[in-house]
Length: 263
Image 1 (tube, helix red, strand yellow):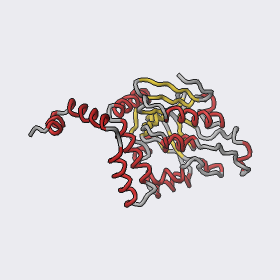
Image 2 (cartoon, rainbow, N blue to C red):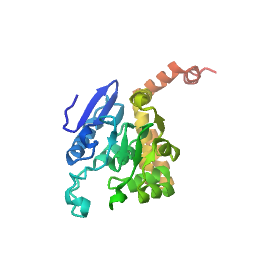
Image 3 (cartoon, rainbow, N blue to C red):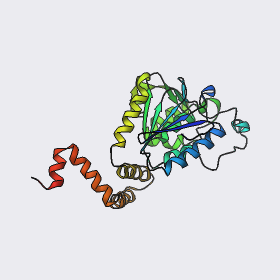
Image 4 (cartoon, one colour):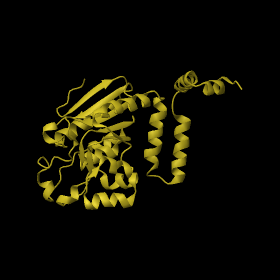
């Protein structure tokens, strides 16, 4: 287990669990936590044994309460903002592995933005989520104004960002902000089950699917289609592809008949 000051990184059965570990401060994004999170993504990016990443918060009450306003200095009042050279939320999104947000408690501001950068979002049934920065005269600074409308549409994104409201877990699910609402006591079990399901699939194909979708969002349809064909034609080695076919044949008689040439 790697050691970081404000993040706990654990690995088990092909999955990495990243825990934001500042429960005494609502797991808010201090400058140290942002540095630690970037370092964690650097470590995971090159670890081929990690097929899936889960992100959660320490404690029972908070996933992440957003930016640590006490650590932000004069930036909160309009002063110069000391931005890190690499934004941890962007680095999280750039991980080649699928990333699951296990939202165990309040996810406000930057906490919501962390969830937006993940590929799957599971939320505890008693948790709330929102982009609340406008209520103290600020705006989301970790990609919320860009990722949220791409996920839930412009109308609802404007409602969330420009009013600064907090959504219940069910409200977040109803607008497509999260994939599932899970009883709090079962959240991590469900996250691990989803990680195991993803881990059973060919990792080269899962990573390629993530790349096609994420990169295609900033392309024209024509460019995206070309990217899709390029990725499909170049993903995986012949050995990896054969292994994926053999696993499919072992699980399904239909695939077994197709790939063995039977009619």
